[in-house]
Length: 158
Image 1 (cartoon, rainbow, N blue to C red):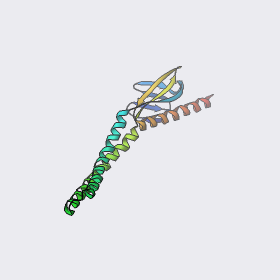
Image 2 (cartoon, rainbow, N blue to C red):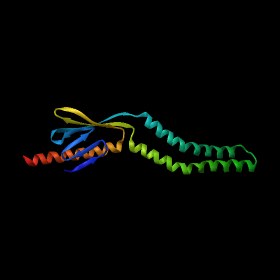
Image 3 (spheres, one colour):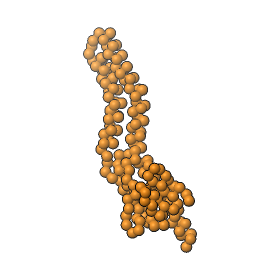
């Protein structure tokens, strides 16, 4: 028996697909397809908030430098405003790596719900529904490999 994919909820082997305590023998599985659901605006808004957290202090620093040049104040005040603006912009650097990592993860997870369906015993069955794009891809590819290998094995037996 070959294990194509396994996590706490899904196990795909060369014999069957097990999801949520139910088993679907590969010999009884017909067509496999997927459906992409509506966009999760919460995920998009969260991604935008992370990017704003990075861009906000940088924009404030740029505006501070522009303001210091336009005000025509004394040299000491201008240097103070420019210095503060540069420090404000630099303050973002330590947090930027952390925030950009979360932005990357949000793209990895995706912003759509995805479903995997199979034809089983003459009817459609939804195997999983997930918002995690990476997990979806792993499961779907493993399922395609398992079904393809099962059909090749069945054809060889005939």
